Image 1 (tube, rainbow, N blue to C red):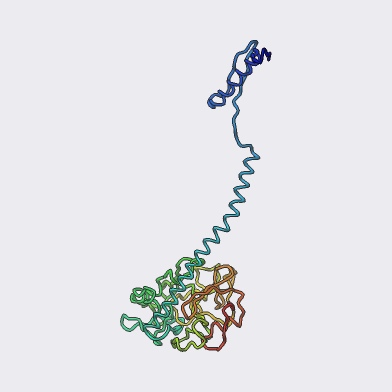
Image 2 (tube, helix red, strand yellow):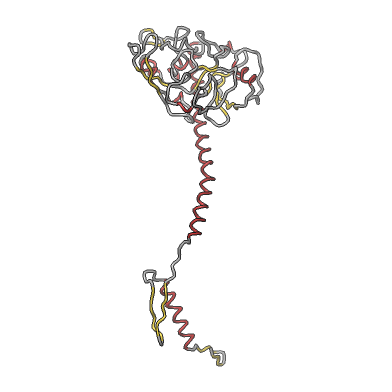
Length: 333
């Protein structure tokens, strides 16, 4: 470029270069035109469009980043869902505990544990019997106070086969029934051996040792709980073998209406344990749950507490007894 008195004069070469730059920019603005030939003295110049795209390495990096984000977010989502399910489980236990108290308010005593595993719900005419003569367990006796009186009023066949969401922990399963031969005495279907549905239950009362609030045959009153209602277990989640959910198991087959049976009554002389997936065995008559690290239980005062699976055996035994004189500290479980 020649300079005359501070004035820039473009040479032909510079003018050609500027022209080509303008053509290049024009081509970039027109993606539909793949290339162009521009004439110049002595031949043509080929301008090829530049396309932007991911390279394979860049694509793999993006996929890796997405995978890392998903792996970080998935546990958080699962934890949030479990927290919601556990809250719903708490609410259901609270409803059951309140139904026990409503039963006590109306009749002056808590529901009993019933008579035996083959005893159907007891009626006088079309009305369910209340008190020591009721052979079915606590699950049947609290129905009127769970806004399910229409189920018990419909008769024993409907009652034993109607699965109620309140009796199921959402962390474990939806409401569920199994089909079994009618071995009630007398048969609820009218014909022994006929297949009838049994509505199951994820909760059990305390305790099989008969030192707790729910006893066989004889109902218990609040005045009988000398350890204090805030120191005594009423009802909690029961341990199950999750591998066989939906299939009859020894502790998950008779259903929520059953009288004195491990389906609805569990022991407190052994600490709770989590659910398992073994090829054999059931819940071993223990309390327990599908929640990680804990199970939930309602005390006799109606409050719901979270209890660790690491609770000491002696503490849990004392919690199950209603009048053993043991004082349980606020942080013992």
